[in-house]
Image (cartoon, rainbow, N blue to C red; front, top):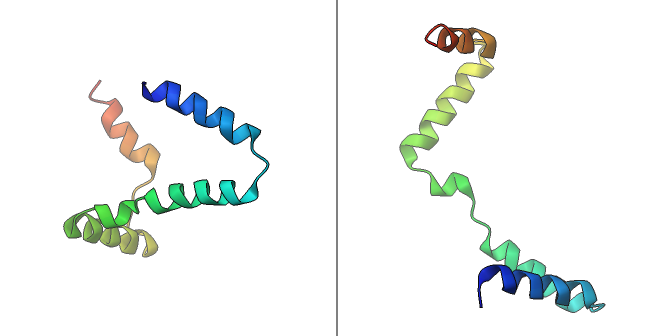
Amino acid sequence: MNIETTKLELMHLLLQTQKESILKKIKSVFEEEQVDWWNEMSKKEQEEIKTGLAQADKGEYKANETVMNRFDKWH
């Protein structure tokens, strides 16, 4: 059985059920499987983002248009 078939079968079962307990269980499975992308990043990546946010808070940034214009000149 391939993954698409399994998804369709699960959707069918999900749409048919009227049991809230089943829906809560399914929802909890998805919530448990969610990965926090922040925790998946390296400490260096986290620090770079924190630095960038601190700079932006101080107004130390360039407008998107300014940056994109630099790249447009290369094409």
